[in-house]
Image (tube, rainbow, N blue to C red; front, top):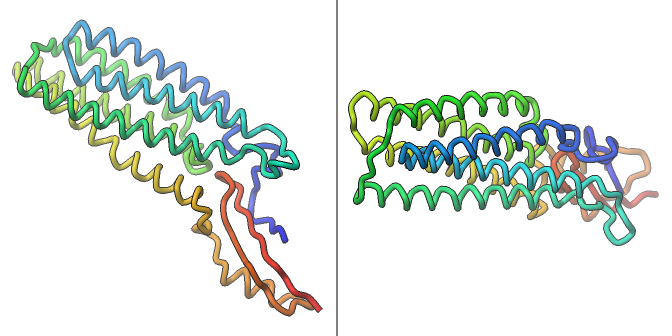
Length: 262
């Protein structure tokens, strides 16, 4: 027995994420541009923080590309062998995004620890200028995805990655200013560690919510007890068995039940 539970991705002819495809394309372009600029800036300035932020920007571009690819696959029509089509691909993409964020965190932390034992001369002025440019570009990306983060795990992952990169740019700006004004070189690896720590809670939240869907847990806004009572209150309904609620992909909750009638 099916049940219409709010706006469904299926009724729209695709997933909720699909409506934001163009914005994702713009976000990919912005993240890729930031990555190139930050890598060049990191090589010229010697800043690990800029390089860490560049790696994060690259992860943004890769992660959003995965999200876009998953959205494209999810638009394929269901078949007799795949009655829900490829909608679940979006959730797998969200999991992969989270794992990429964890990998970046480990690399940044390891590299920053190495910088404390082997300091590198960093050009704070160049580091500051490049970071300001990266922050402005990330703000544009956040604006593009501002109303999408609550509608899909995929889009939430993309939004959180851009937000984390923006906060990372702020950390690089502060580190660059400290080096520029005081010459304290340790500010660079410290800024790198801050960038890494910003990744952890976002990766955890995204992975937790994605696994919630993959484990076919009941959606948080679905009260199965209330649904059972509602069904039993219908005329002619004798009993309700095997009541299950889960989520196929963001915006597509599903309910099934064995309903005994007179």
